[in-house]
Length: 294
Figure 1: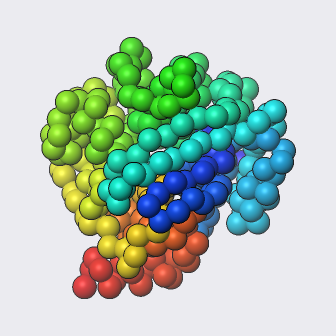
Figure 2: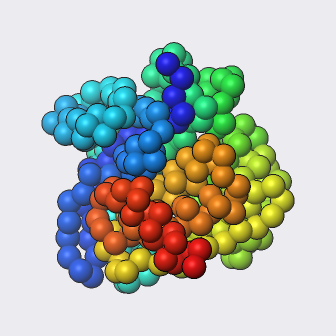
C-alpha cells in the first residue's frame, strides 16, 4: 500500500506546567499530525516508539483509521513542558525518559506520497533514516525541533550548534519551525527573513509558526494568516498540528495560499483544547469561512 502521508516520531508523555495549572497529555508530533491527516480523510500511517503501557495512543489512532507501526520500548519519551507566562513561544522542556532513536528497518518497506519527520530532539531521527527516506519517490518534510534541540546532562532541551545542518536541509523539501527556532538557526528575528535564509539551504517550502499565526514561504512567495482561537488552552502541539494541516492540504492539491489559510483554521481549533485536534472537517470548513474567507 502507498499512503498519502507517513508521520514518524516518538510518542511523548507530556506534563504541562503553566500559570493555569499542571496537566498530563498524550503528545508527540506524529500523534498531533496523524489526528489532522485522519480528520482530512487521507490514507495515513504513523511510525512510533513507546512503552506498551501507553498502547492506548496506538489504539486511538487505529480507531481513526490510521495504520500504526509501533516499536515497543522499555519506556516512553517523557517530557515536562513549562510555560512560565502566557506567551506560548516561551517554554522550557525537560526530558526524563526516552524511547530511543528510529532505525532504517522501521521505514524501509513503507511507501507514501509524503513523509513527515516529527522528532522531539536531536538524535531521535538519525542521518541514515533521512537518507533512506530521501531515496524514496516522495516529498520529505521535517520539524526543525527534531534537529536543533539537544538534551543536556540535566535533561533540559537547549538549542545548540547543529553540525549536520547542510546535510539535512539539503535533503528536505519542506521544513517547519517556530519563530524562536527559526531565529536560532538563522539569526534573523523577522520570520520572513528567516524563511528566505532557510530556503537558500535547501527546503523549497518553509512553514514558520509564531504566537499570532503562521507564515509560509512557497514558490518564491510569502503567505501569512493569523491564528483565531476563541480561547487559548492547548499551546502544546501547535506547530505539529499546523505543519500537518498545511502538508496534507498541499497533498490534496491546494495552492500554498489556500493551504496556509487551512492550516491556520485547523490550528486555531486545536489551540482551543489540550491534546490532539478533535474537530471534524466540517467544523474546520466552518471556521475557515467565518474567520478567513468572509
